[in-house]
Length: 259
Image (cartoon, rainbow, N blue to C red; front, side):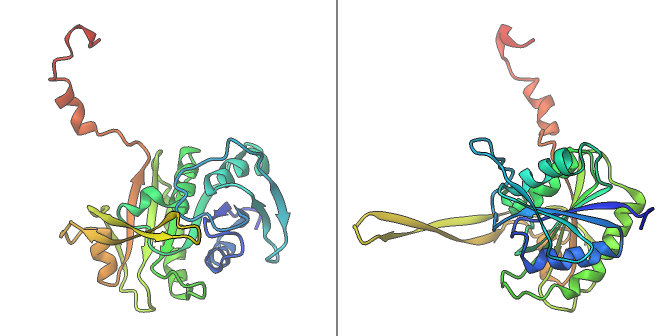
């Protein structure tokens, strides 16, 4: 495997999650695998990093032939430590994150620890992909995703990705995936509610609940693709500038304060 690419594997469900095992198995057929993953679940941590307490990075031996480390921090911490301490500044050829238990389509990309790890890879100029499956069960079956993960990964390794760009890949549940759709992120969001309860001391506490609302009826979105049995592939960027708004803001009157 001397000439094969070096692939960093991360996730947010924790180093023992079934999803990362499935992803490792695919990546082992493509390159030399190094895993740096949280020591426990870190879902919905977004792009959080650890600054107020020390981080731990310990080697583990879970899968034969795979260099693995568990990290006490967030998914983004895992990527940062991988680049700085494991690879010692020599970056891997690819960063893949997942396979996540649950979708990271549409607005979920902002909350996702899985996708934030991939974003951090892209910030480090590493071609990066986040993979997620529409199944929250601990015993979720990831086998039907593997062929598509291999296809997509091979294309990224062959063609690369532009600086600042990464891929957000989501798979529908079930083994009848119709194919791959290149999509845009749907205009959808969570309509959130907080279930209010009382503890034994009569103090209020809350559980976050809600429903996913799709306000986008286009047939070129990730939500549409997944609902119709396709794997969705959305190119994502971490430059959040609303470039279209700059000309508009330049017409506003800021008086003498505008340089």
